[in-house]
Amino acid sequence: MDFRIALIEGDGVGPEVISAARAVMDTASKAYGFGLHFEKLRAGDGALSEVGSALPESTRSKLYECHSCLKGPVGRTASDVIVRLRRELDLFANIRPAKTIGTPSSSVGEVDMVIVRENTEDLYTGMEFELADGAVAMKVITAHASRRIAEYAARLALSRNRERKITCVQKSNVLHLTDGLFARTCRETVSSYPDIRYEEMLVDAAAMNIVRRPSSFDVIVTENLYGDILSDEAAEIAGGIGLSPSANIGERYSIFEPVHGAAFDIAGSNTVNPTAAILSGAMMIRYLGEIYGGSDCIEAANAIEVAVKNCIVSGKRTADLGGNCSTSEFGRNVAMLIRNGSR
Image: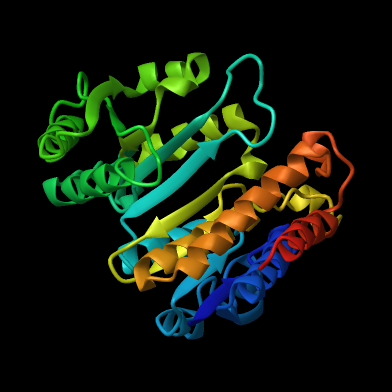
């Protein structure tokens, strides 16, 4: 099957990491017999300065014509791009795996958790108001959004060799109505899945335990703000934010992107770690295989993940991981392993 993929390079190091990811994805699609046709679209700081909009109408309309989107990091206009797209496209599930690649740190051991973050509500709705001597932001939590993110977390916990455990993270001991509703809805939803072990944890305790005993977590389901913060913490524990991919999933559309930012200070130096973008591409290919029934896509996603790990384990790493590979060289090394191991 052939897939049409929207490609948003973004700002700063975005073009570099997306270029490396695209090279790997092109190699994998050819090796495993499916087509990826990329359509470059504009969004971000550069688009704002060039055409007067961080998210041009032409980009928004063409997104709907594609099967999925791979997006690079965006700079100061992130709220006008990805936050807006999450709401407009109802990309309610933000999926952020944190997994040790290569030799785990002796201080924390092996890390393999997934943070499932509700992506459309909480304080990120942007409903802020000025007061006479300050400001107020509205925290919005609904039973509908809480239920569907809990359902997504449950399905994920039962798939792909996970440990069938869900930790619901919130602050219901203080925020009785909002976080209380989230916890209660998650508890009720997951109760219909008897094979899943379910627990609840306050967000401050979760932040501590991610550092102290990360191996105790499997799937974390949480609200928007908490998930944003905890996923960066988990990524750092697992080896660094340069390794962390993510997905924004809705009923009808999906956007995949590295967790890290635009890193303007090293943009253009060909030194940034492209692993997060490459693994985001692998997540997208796997997702397409699951949605459209393509075992070739799932095999290709597996091959990308194995090739990335083998490169890192063998010492062919970028500088942030103690190696000397450039961004483009790391991408070529991953692609070469896939090509050499193809059918």
